[in-house]
Image 1: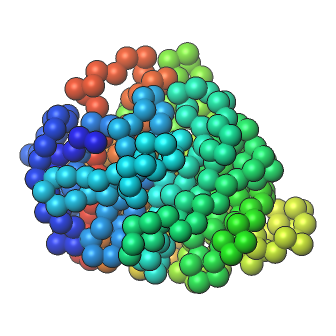
Image 2: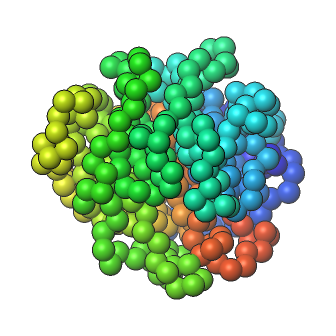
Image 3: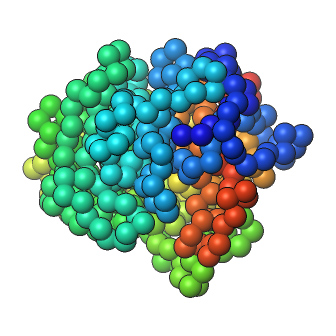
Length: 367
């Protein structure tokens, strides 16, 4: 992994530079919202970001248009990275890592492996879809939950995860087929719920405008991306989720998700639509009770306050397809993946124009 690190917060080790990466306009100031800080830049496409105690930072790179050097890395001081949890897992253990999350106890890094590379559409890898737990104290894998054909059928794509470390349950989105996957971490048993429901599927006619133009493939097809962003509230009682090509934000009681005896019809009726926002990818709750999300159409990070009011947190031309969000100790970090500028949405991408990065804003200064 070649990486350039510009600067970071006190909670993150100071990084140096190294390798080859795209140029950034350092003089540009944010258009609106809180000041934007560029923490790192990459010459490979990142998606997931996770923050651990003591400023530990983890980034994941999916096996999409080209195979990444490493699937998951930890950022180290001096501009270095290390494959995480080790070289063996990155060489032969992962297939296509989509996202990472550190649980609220700060004890475990959870890694979502979607299980098939998008470079080969619909290519299902046997045993590929899985959820991997890494103990941050020992940097060793402590649990691997493999998803079978019932919980992650061929053609599904496991996307984001939320982990309730108190109740020992995990919740994932399937952005390809439109569903939620509920996992009992104590037993490893997983179930698919709300498959094909209006709340987990893309809204008809929604074509996000990203980078100044409608998001379509170079064949003119508008992608339909289903359940994607997901966030667990502070109590763990409500799971918020949404499709990417949609404007609706929904939630459902986690007690019903955990109860296998609840019928599909009862669960569907329990889903609440709490509001509408711009098209978004990643989501996370802050300590202030607000739901933060990536606003793809506005080159921004926005938030929905507890009273339902929408606000801009940061807006800047460098926020090119903000992907995942992680919040810890009053600071919000997010990756930029430029999905709209890569194949098949752009038929040719000059590597010198790729601007993959890791950015952050200090929420402590938020009004």
